[in-house]
Length: 149
Ligand SMILES: [Zn+2]
Image 1 (tube, helix red, strand yellow):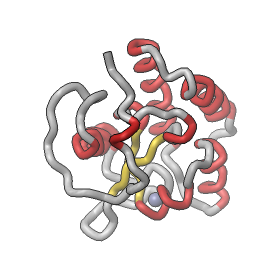
Image 2: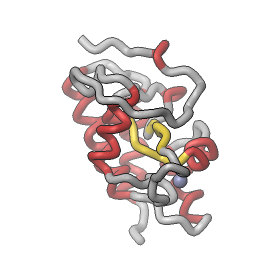
Image 3: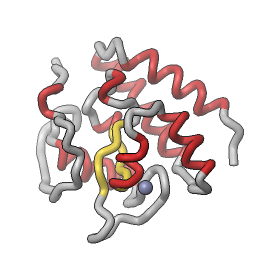
Image 4: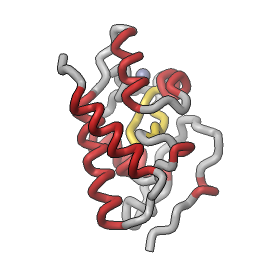
């Protein structure tokens, strides 16, 4: 069974060097999950679209924030630049998404939808995550209802 690994995530959200990791993605280390998220999604910030390079390092962004029960799983993580990650804080996904668009950015909505859907599947398979579930369902519903473009 997958146990939640609360103690693994501190308040430090810095970009770190990446090293290859092993094991299932649910249990893989942070750096390995970040690597996997970048391979899965492409190498840009989910919110502002900046391309990562030596000066702009990716940080782990929890789609459903940890404080709202979101797990530290690959299925709940995307790459975001440090600025966006920090500015979002603990705001709900769609609330922050609207803010990004007000600022004239082009957040990667299809990526967010894919990740939320994969998180729903992962929770269905693994169980648990009672706190995250209503958040997740609500955010996905709101995301799908938003006008496109
Ligand atoms: Zn950004």
